[in-house]
Structure formats: C-alpha cells, structure tokens
Image 1: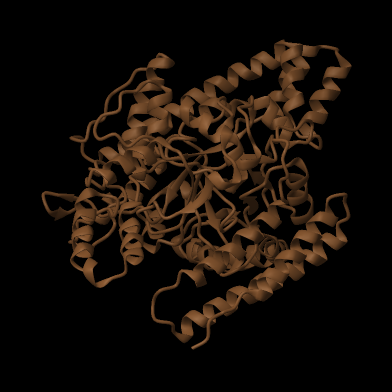
Image 2 (image 1 turned 120 degrees about the horizontal axis):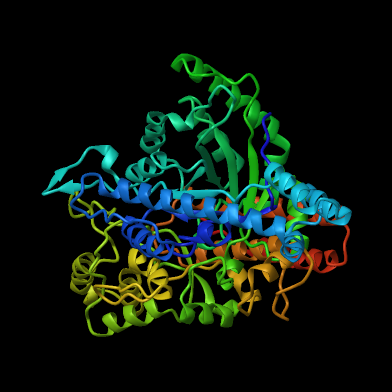
Length: 599
C-alpha cells in the first residue's frame, strides 16, 4: 500500500460556507490540512478579488455573463489559493531554516510522537552546519497542509436560462466538481450529505482522478460517512467506475457542527470499532472491483491497493480523546472543527459572532429546524440572523428574498425549484395554514407556523461572516450571520491563538473552560437518547408498524452501544473512567425507561 506523510495528526474540516473559505491561506504553511466549501461561487469570486489585491496578484473578474461562470470562478479561486499557499510555504521553510527561534517555535507545534519533530530536534541539538542540514531535512520531509474542498452532494440544483433547463453538467454540484477538477490543486474533494449517483458518474470525465504510472492520484476522493455499510456501498459504487476513495471521514451523527445526519441509534465508538476491524475487507473488496474497472477502461492498474485513510471528527475536545481515537481505533487523523472557530488565525469569523461563540453555554447550542434542506442543523441562539429573521416575522414579512438559490431544491411549485426559506414559498404556505386556522388548536397552529417561518437563508447567512471580517460590502436584504458550531463549543470560552489550540490538541496546555465537560462518547450518547425521546414525544402522524419498528431498532442499537462502551472503558483504565462508566450506566437506565408506542 502506498502511504503518504503528514505533519499533523489533526485536520480542520469544512465549516459553513465562509468559516474555512481561506483557512489554507492561514494555516497550510504549518502543515495543517483544511477544507474549503466550494458551493458559493459568488463568495469565492469576492474572496478571489480580496486576496488578489492583498497579495498583489493580477485579478480578472468573472461575471455571471461568462459561459460556465460558476465552474470558472471556483477554478480561479482555487488556483489563487494554491499559488499563495505554495509561496507562503517556501517562505516559511526559509524562515525556519535560517532562524533558530522560528524553528523552535515550529517544533513546539508538532505532535510529541512525530518523526519530523524527532528529526528536527536531533539536528537542532547537533548544531553543526545548522542552516544546510535543516534546509535539506525540511525539503525532504516537510509538506504544506492539504487544500481540500467540500461538495455537499445534495446541493445539485438544476439550472435554467429563461425557463430552458441546462444540461446536467451545469447543475450546482456538477459545476463545483468541474471547478475543482480544472484547478491546479493536487488535493482531495470531500463528498458529504450522502450518495448522488449522477454526480459520482461525472467524476469519470476527469483524468486527474485516475492513477498514473507511479500509482499517484493527482486528485483524490474523500467520502464523509456515518457508518461502515454506507462506506463500502459508496466505495464499491465508485470503484466500479475506476474511482478510488482515498479516505473515509467518519463523522458523529449528532455531535458535530452544521447539518446533523442522525444514524439509527448507532454510536460513534462501535462504528469506529467496525472500521478498525473491517478495514482490510474494505481495501480488498474495493481493490478487486477497482482493478476490473481500470482494466476495462484501459487505464493504468496499480498492482497493490492504493492508500485508504480512516479519519474521524465530531465532538473531540481534549488531548486525551484525540490520542485515544488515534491509538485505540488507529485512525490517521482527527478532525477538530468547532474549537477552531475561536482561533482568528485559522478561521474567518466576524468579531461580533466570535464574541457570541466565546460566551455560549450548553443551553445556547441546539439542534434546530432552520435548514431549508429539512435536515436538523446545529446552531447557536442569539445570532444576528435570528434577530433580522424574527423582525420580518413580527412585521408579517417572513422569508428571505432568496438571491442565491443554492437551496431552491423543492419542486413543489415547478421544475425550477424553490427554497423553503424564501418569502415566495412561505407566503403560500402561511396562506394555506391560515385557511385551516379555525379548525385547529392554537398550539398546533403556532407550531405549524413556526415550522414554516423558522427556515433561515443559509446561502447568505453562512457567507456573511467573511464579508464582515474583511470589510467587503454586503448588498441586498439584511440576513446577518448564521453560524453552525457543534455542542462541543460550550466547553471553550475564549478566543485563543493558533499555537495555543495546537498545544491543547497535543496535550501541552489546556484552553478548556473551567466547567464540567462530559467525555465525547458520553455526550453523543446523551444526544441520541434526547433525539429518540423527542422523536417519539413530538410524533403527530398516524402510527404504523414501520414507525414502531424504527424506534425499537433505535433503542436496541443504543443499548448495544452502551454495552460496547461499558466493556471499552473497563478495559482502558484511566482516572476519568469511573465517571464515564457512571454516566453510561445512568443513560442505560434512561434508555430502558423509554416507552416505544404500540399499535
């Protein structure tokens, strides 16, 4: 198997549209990998103009009048980021090869078990021919962090010109993929939010996703998955097309930021255990299918399976948890997302929103219904978006003007699609509801009205932070900022430097608030218990055997997860395990008391 080297044992996952839009420019020179969302071509175009000016790089505007403008804007911005990162990395290598203090600072940022840290420390101790030895070592062993991109596979709206539908390749996600494929980047596309067969097939059009004669993939595929079954189904589907999945990025179903795709009660620990046990099976099965597909396509066929990484993210908050995930489950990297929202050197967040994040307590962070996708969405109370949205509701002007239409995916009123957060959609739905008002209880009416009006304009709200941070003018209806931290934010209460956060991750210091923080597995377990309880309590449809079967399976899976954790924390002894075991026992009792309705 062909393995790659990496400087750090953590990565920064995609956050919102704006929050990691320029993270590689900020942190890649230190070997830190991060992910850019490439949904919003308008935001990318404005960031292209901003950074071109900042780094004195010629800029050519790409307007909406240009053919295939969406893909071209994405390519242009990614090429710019690639250029800036390469330049910053060269300068950083020069700095640490010429300055002993700069080198010492960099060494202090590296994980304790890093072979690169060991090698640099050894050369530093020798002190002979310092500059030349260090320079040679750095050139041979150091690499910049990956500039990866994210495509939410569901954000694949059909596009039209004067009511005439454009070919599929002009769909939003297809154009995003083309934008990445045509860029100079040698990195990965992270596919999230489930399977999109049409989009997956479109990958076959781009040479960079096939291996060269040296077994290298110029561009790679990362799948964000919630369980092993999903991984092997999607992995083999792509392998049949001659496409290799280089990484399976496992994310907690609920203990994460942004959209939460809950599993059927399957918990993160047992899921990771299955990946650890069945990784050889995953490699062997996909490799066999992959070889046949490449042979049929008359492409180069690697003799050995290409590298597959298993990574994890969602709710990790301490060095002990970080190390446990790496050592016990043998994952290749751990994603730290939400805590980095409090690191100005790493993420793009406006001052007002960052202050709101720092003050957030457990009760401020909640799983909301604000996403037009109809998927539960982790967010925080008190955002500026909430203020402007409520103002419109109070003035009987609910809904957004919907300028970007990335989430105009409902075909209820026609093939061109409409967003459920738009004023146009909400006006119709509120009128329909008012016609039935007299026939329903007030509480049901208010609940139904709230379900319509709570939807937020994510396209604008998730992008505004970058405009505010960089003093880029915002046009159109005031939407304020939507931000999507995970519940883990409650335990981080201050803005910190990049160095401080890295030292926290590697156990050299702590930036946690002085408050009780449950173990990440316990926190997720609680969220799943609450989710099941709420799902049963708020159920208003006609009860069927299918609903009962789903809840019984959910409950059963939770209890199996509890047994797994009880055995796990009995075998791995440390000072915290007594309280973890106690918490798990408490939730076991709560689960057993959950009553699944009967027909």
